[in-house]
Image 1: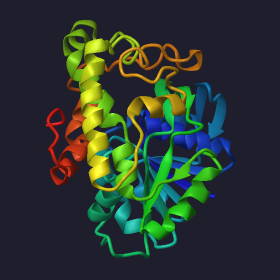
Image 2 (image 1 turned 90 degrees about the horizontal axis):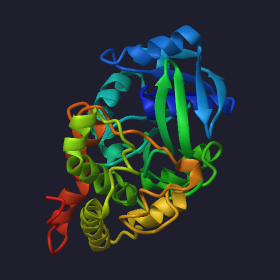
Image 3 (image 1 turned 180 degrees about the horizontal axis):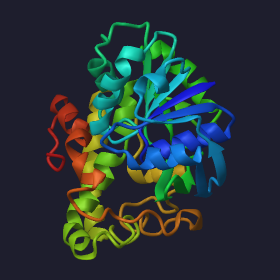
Length: 321
């Protein structure tokens, strides 16, 4: 299969590596504002991974030419923080054709709708199959030029939904080769509301702002950054998220329940569950070096979809706002 990956950050490189290691021809695109990683990958012609996924996987193209990346692709994976989705859609739009499948991975705010709108495609245009996953299937960080370290690859706790909804099973089948545990969500409301970013990342980052500035992010984001007080804030936000989902007719799990299912946690609670990961996920990702450059805070406005969806619920969310 011809696979295009839009986004060459931590997640994009993990997606590109994994699909290439499964034998697919992978092309990787990054916008010109982020030249570093694709230049190193283009020079080597491969991505190297350590950790749960290991080895070297060939990348047939890495660069800034969206047309070369997207044209002829069977599957287009849009991988990046929520604020990048519209930029990727604008770059890809002139080269899209109806037979292609497009997946925003991960969503955090109805990413499939954001991609459609930015690409100039109507929600009613069912010629284009555009879906989204509930989360990124990896805990991963770049560890060097053209090199990643994968802490965890999800075996469960991952869902996909499509627009139009009738295309969900097709996407699940396509993704199932590389993500065999992926499930079909009932709608993109379910994938968006199941995403844990709005529960975890803003709370942990903001509560640890002083520590990030003092240490330059030299601490483990989850193990060191989550204390009982931070856990209480996360629980308050998560309770509102689940109430919003129920008001919209969606069934979702609590974030700790998903964490256990995904293999990130062994205790289903908000305070000790995150700082005590299983051995396979121990010594996980560090915090970002500054507040200003952290995708965990820069994506916060886009992670607030549960809050604005909460306008449809009663009582309205308090902690999210």
